[in-house]
Length: 624
Image (tube, rainbow, N blue to C red; front, side, top):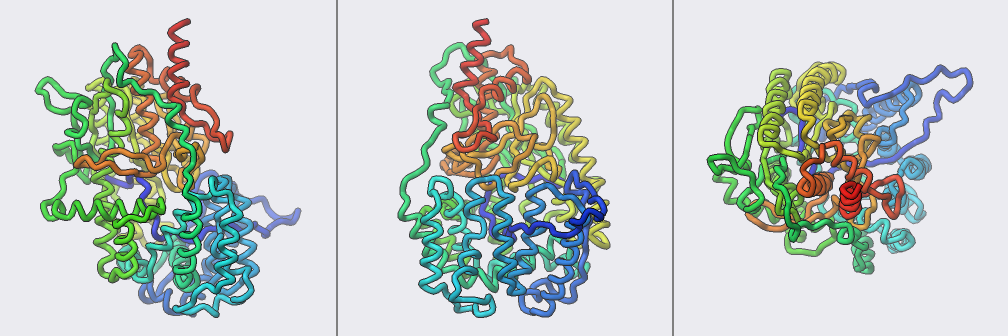
């Protein structure tokens, strides 16, 4: 299907460096007014010629410096011309300027950029941890220049001491997840892994077009900076952060148990069909919670990657891949354990694998992770959606998601077929009298542009933007119409895991504003906003999306993180409200969920779902 992806937070291996630089251009009274930027699509696209392979930028300083100069010139011109208020976009654009400052050995600018990104951050943990390693390295005068680093460089005792002191001074209850993520990301990165990703994802397009988009150019420059100046610090950073984790064994308090609404012993519940519009569900795991038809068959509608009707509630795994499922599961568990700083055999194996993986094995290795993530996702979501509700009856709408590093080429024809599948799926849910549907997936305009570039389609970035807009609008309008056609269903969708404003980036369906739609962000067990959750005016309620335990195919219980896990927690509450009072409309249920939510203990901006309070509001409603 075109452009949609699951919203499970798998480890983010290759994020570019992030930072911000205040725009100092055009500040005089005579300067022309900047052009307003309402969405990400309002910004111009840039294209850069590249002679040779993309990895040559890692090995040739003159070539990399020439690209850096061109990219820096365009970014500074855009910041002078456009009024960019979106903080995520500023961090991405100016994060590239940070990478360039590092490559140019400009310590003063790099330090200023690190400070300024913290001014943009609203999430308390990110405000504290952003730039932690780079700032420490830059401010300890023992190494005054990046150029002193080599492949065998190791942080001195002074660097370790300074880094440890910075971490120790931070409130652990605020930063622990960020610190653990940082530790895990360093543990899995290696030069072969990075070069293998570039070889698999970027080189095929470069071989066809001999160009780079601005996004790809920025990614390559950031990766060059990481390879030269951060990767040599791996052992020292991991040692310091591991020591910090070991010193803090206490966990955050869990606020969710006190808010729980368990209907397991409740009588007179009305069965509630619950739609799981996802990658498929291992239904035998949820016997007693499955909706069946007159032939006693499970209620399932399924589509393949090209939106053709197929059968089966769970994505079929090829026989050759079936044999490797235990290995894939261990890989996923290892990555999840690393993110949580859990010292397990699986985590040890992942560290060993990613540190020594040959470049030609990177592509199949990462595609296995994505394949298993797709395979497990819907089953995990379904378990969250039906927990504590014997009245829930699962109705499956199965989508097939692409798991390849280079996805299929997006086309208008495929977008039209996708829209038809949305309409059929929603009609199927309505025919089965589904009351609430969970949608833990989404897509955006830029991902279509990325897919076009990855396949070498289009003469330049601007040309791809026009094609992507046409394709995206077909899918967006079709999905919006499908949801509007079912006012009798409450749709619950995940906000996304890109730490972005869903409206500005035009993420669908989480940017939709509909009376029968709730968009959900993710917090952790203490109610603190996760570092990954997307946000914006469209995100009305937050739920637990951090290391949430549920079953995967076969029955193993695993903790997954992502807004994918937060969304079915809200769908779970909606289904319970419908089971208690089937006369509720979708608008009634949505109001009870929103009105029952209360501010996070750490941030009043974040409204947390509170099932117990929503239940109390329902009881009060009945007493009137």
